[in-house]
Image (cartoon, rainbow, N blue to C red; front, side, top):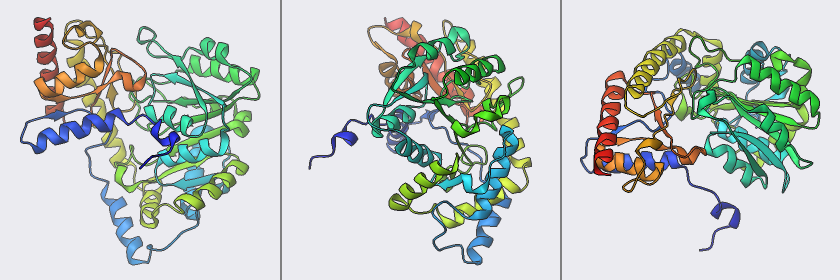
Length: 396
């Protein structure tokens, strides 16, 4: 059966591919340390699970409004207003089945065929693929490890054309863990003032996972007058260990939310009712479990970064957010592993450690490792990585 051209053109998720390969080897009885998936290994906090159970007992098993229950929209609006320094109303928030559906809805509602979207790289592959699915053209704007993966604002400025519709930002970054610092944020605000036709979408799903001395900087907090041009993507998956609950939310001016509501009404209708009540408890309830989770991630971050930095000729920018390290391993490429994809396959099959190749994030020569797992697994995984790299170099 022939599939549509738009779907056939999509690039499969390299992260899910490597995770699936690792799981297949584990199922075959092989001992694999997987450092692939961006999923907290913590349980969803008890008070959130309890809220879900109570909601079920009270009948949260039916349709809700397409945009989500009003209590959750109000809680998300209050939370986002506080973070971004603008007044966001509940009717300017929409709840969807994960932040990825928020991105899909917003891009489908904003982008026409041929519209250009500026995307700093390295970036999460779904950012570019969802732009393409909407008929848009991703315009990649590389950032350099030597500059801490800070966005090159002058490069963005040079790439703006008459077709440029949107700037898509992600801070903290998946895959680098880099944060947009205040100096860069101010440059971005100036760019937006100089180009009033340019809209901005920010993927802020990791904003609670920030480690000292890093700090999440909101462009809107620097200039609240820009609110009418912003689309904020957020959610509970990463910060509250709720990946499987599938709740994300988007804040934007009311006309865009109305368009997204119309689209979602034809695609999925509402996000799961019980998950919405769980997300409400996450936003309004005890924040201590999240604070403890962030503190543990900080410990794991230090362990992984130090271990990677101790490997000869491996260079790794210290991440200040999310839960990824993104080292440059290009010094180990050669006849047996000509690129990072081949290197990642070699490490999986010969060193029994699963990582994600940087090519999928538009950064050849790098690999992504997730520290959303225990310290012993991080230490063993990086030990296997180092051993695999040494064996590879010896065979060249």
